[in-house]
Image 1 (spheres, rainbow, N blue to C red):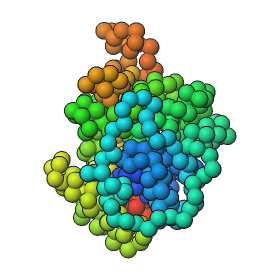
Image 2 (cartoon, protein in one colour):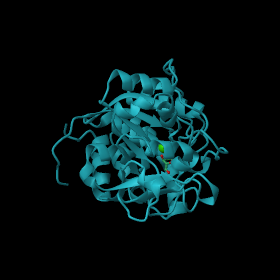
Image 3 (cartoon, rainbow, N blue to C red):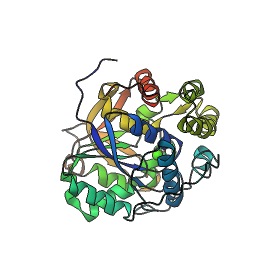
Image 4 (cartoon, helix red, strand yellow):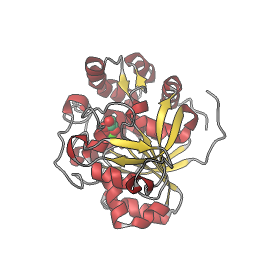
Amino acid sequence: MNQQPKQQPHKIIFDTDPGVDDAMAFFFADAHPQLQIVGITTIFGNVAVEQSTANTLRLVDIAGGDYPVAAGLGKALAGEPRPYPHWVHGKDGFGDINWPASNRSPDQRPAVDFIIETLKASPGEITLVPVGPLTNIAAALARAPEIAELVREVSIMGGAINCPGNVTPLAEANVANDPEAADAVLGAGWKASLIGLDVTMKAVISSQDIARITGSGSEKAKFLAAAAAPYIDFYRNNAGVDGCCMHDVCALARLVAPEIFTMEEAAIRVACEGFSRGKSAAMPPGHPAADESWQSRPVQSYARAIDNTAMLELFIETLSGQTQP
Ligand code: RIB
Ligand code: CA
């Protein structure tokens, strides 16, 4: 894997709805030397926000970190709520393995306040990494539009540009859970990258690969082996994949190993009406046929392709503590 010049480490706010692949992403962020978790904000999505907050506190315990965890919003900006996908992540979000609850308490501040205050305190330094519905991010933007000038960048797991969705034939789960929020986030003046199913469905880790990581026998290893098993069963039985998809890890990997991804610049919009509700669509900059509603959109980027072998290697090396600073 050719190494690019190292960028400045990314200080991140990780916005998450754990979720098994969220847990993988959290452990990746906790372990990678080029990522520094400034705080974690929780959101509904794979489970109710109360459960995603309790799960995040569990993850902080397992990792032995001491990150602030701020509880987020429990429902979308608009529209009918979607069912929690217990058939993918289990009723408790971690494969129903009944992992012991944490004794930690969340931060006093709600997630939206935490995001705004943290960005204002460190202008230009923080990268937002939302890997669930974009409700917290959109709510922070609505309350304090100036944050669009205060972030370093936004790296989003979500969307399906040139591939089918996973909750409808057109829509990916995070975007479908709050299309209005996703359209607002992708229409803001910050630098946003959409890492969607186009690449994350190819970011597969097999049970054998997870076993290699779990070989260290740590708490993290035991948790991953237990929580990932039912998640792998879902992908084996429903997507013909011998393993599971590291959807959320990809939004972090793009920050530390951009060479793994092929990115395309585009204006990106999200349909909010009718049967295409939740569909994310991209138009190359300056497309002559586009009407004003497209021409006026900021140019963002989305991931078109991935070196999935390099992605797997990066994840295993990082969780095995072999990534060089
Ligand atoms: O579509 C995949 C996304 O939805 C991932 O973030 C997964 O954790 C779920 O939130
Ligand atoms: Ca997620």
